[in-house]
Image: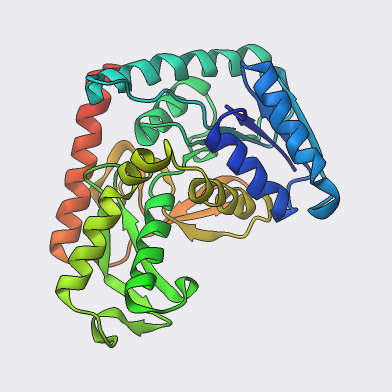
Amino acid sequence: MKVSIVGGGGLVGSCAAFALQFGGIASEIALVDVNEDLVGGQVLDLLHGASLTSDQRIVGGTAEQSADADVICITAGLRRKPEESRLDLINRNVALFKNILADLKRVGYKKDAIVFVVSNPVDVLTYLAVKELGLPPQQVIGLGTVLDTTRLRSMLAQQISVPPSQVQVTIFGEHGDSMVPIWSNAQIAGLPLEKFPGVTPGLIAEVEKKTRGSGAEVIKKKGGAGFAVGVSIADVIHSIALDQQRIMPVSSLQNGAYGLHDVCISVPTVVGRTGAVSHLEVELWPKELSGLQRSGQVLRETIDKVLGG
């Protein structure tokens, strides 16, 4: 399977490429970027470690590298300027994203390609890609709350001293302020979270608060997230490449799940070779359901503002 990473010269794109290299599942990784020197350096750095990782073809180039890709992962994006409003940043990223989509349409793409959006605001841009590219909606997915979910699991594991891989709790909704942690179904190694030793409502509230602010904290301390988002991206791509049919909180176009319509948002989604294979509904606490539906309304309002509906 060939994966092209649009924005492969940047922190997120290069970290995704590194995670995919160690995964050893993608047969070819193409880094696409307007900065030819930067992307060339990233490719060289990856190639220099190839004998210790896996046997893959790793190349750099322009939009043409996406024409025969099985997964087109878009990570390119702009950072917020001082004194810039969130809406202004969204508008600038929408403009950049439209140029990327125009390039993809110009060079063409495979009919069964999966377009995987990571650029922020991820839910809005995933919706834009659905509307612009003409692919079946299930072939366009966004990273959604996959990164938020692993942050939540990892920080909860740290607080109660358990292996992170044994924490099961997921975040639904927008990748943003209105995200909804689903505590009603949370478990530790199959045991109910609320009955696990040391877990209190106060601890849960503290972990949730830290998760909500963790992205901003990483940006403040090191300039931007890289490692965690890189492995999150690779995790989704591996589920596509191996047709694993895993249930993941990716963002995709909704047509009725939890009462959500005509927005791209994260709900339990079966992810396989055809993208978002199906959506699942599990029973939620009433406050979680109302929070998820409110998150959908927030996204709908943002879409109306920046895309005109």
